Image (cartoon, rainbow, N blue to C red; front, side, top):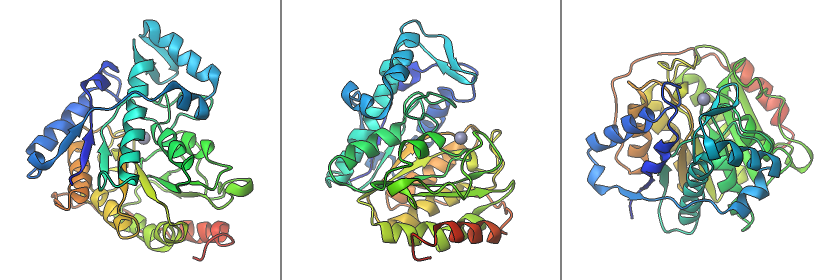
Length: 335
Ligand SMILES: [Zn+2]
């Protein structure tokens, strides 16, 4: 069994020209994959479109209709920074469907793990609103589908931006946990450590707001003290990683200082708890580096770790953040 890569040329019908979230991102990542020593062992799978019924279980009718109507003609903005192309209603459902079906495969044991190389991204899309380059919430739709079958799912989000959409969809639920570290203050403005969920979802939203320049060592401490202990206690059947590479030090929309190798390291840390992992692409805009960040993760999924020359050191002082998180989450988890 090998790592399937979900991909379709159709994703690049979401043709946003010189917008930072553009088709070149996928071309750069596919090029990187072709250079990888394990390229011939990979299996590419074509996504299936997400059924409309499932879409309506997570997103509001008004929001879905809006995307559908705008995408009939395309070339329009659904919010200040989110572009909608012709046929995007289908393209976005193809991205979401690709993530959902490969997550099901991994949970059922038909694949050990997987990478969904999809566009448009999803983590800013809430139940009611497309925003932040995202139309529908790919990871959220996949997690919701599995939760209906009684599975516990962790969505871990390492994009530099907080995944406000994913957080809000599951804020009152305990079947899907959301964990994120992100730059703060930064777009979209949410993700304070005090945002821990509501009702029976209390303790199932975990936010680590980091400062400008925090790097690998800071996030590594968060893994040791927060992310891994909570994941071990939560015992997810599947981990979906919202893989945003804009937390790399080079990213023009970022401000954190992660190195390319650390993206594979994060996968490795979670594999020790639950090897059933599906990464799904979110942000990441530096075309010189996203290919390497991506390969670092695919290499780790393939048990073929690669190392890149990227000796950048970020700020590692993260004690105040960890203390605050422990105070917030201590009543719910042994930390
Ligand atoms: Zn982002």
